[in-house]
Picture 1 (tube, helix red, strand yellow):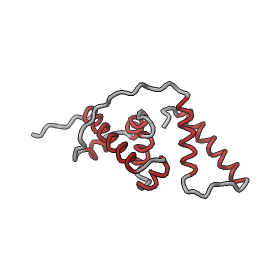
Picture 2 (cartoon, one colour):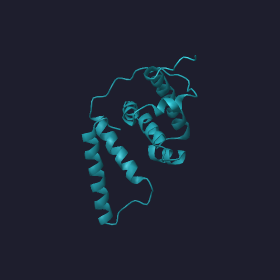
Picture 3 (cartoon, helix red, strand yellow):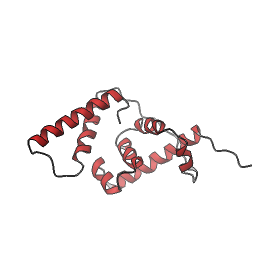
Amino acid sequence: MLGDARKAQEIFQTTLREAALRAAHGELPKEPFWLFRDARWRCLEASETDLQAEPLEIDEHDIVPEAPSQIEQLEPAQLAIWISSAPDPQRTALTLFYLDEFDYREILDLAELKLSELSRLLAVGRRQFQAWLDAMLPKKPNV
């Protein structure tokens, strides 16, 4: 989410240390995703102090049936780098979507989004990702 492994490690350790202190005092929240949300907010706060890229128009392509096979050709780090460059909350929505560990209700809760916002962010992000895939992995001509 931060694009910087060192900062991510620091935030991870700080978040776990805070959780351990809360647990020691019997103060853990009852909501299921509080730890994810807390870590996300810490990442957002850390990224606000960094230089921010200027917003730019990114090409969008319709999602093609070959998209899953294109994605399979990528190294996991390539997908992570692409997602980490998206602005938040799109970055959060795409991360949770591509982790494939959360259902839509959980993503809405974690990202603190409305369904219409999540839908728009995912749709635009996936079309932008498809354009990037098409540029990185050109389709082979039919013979």
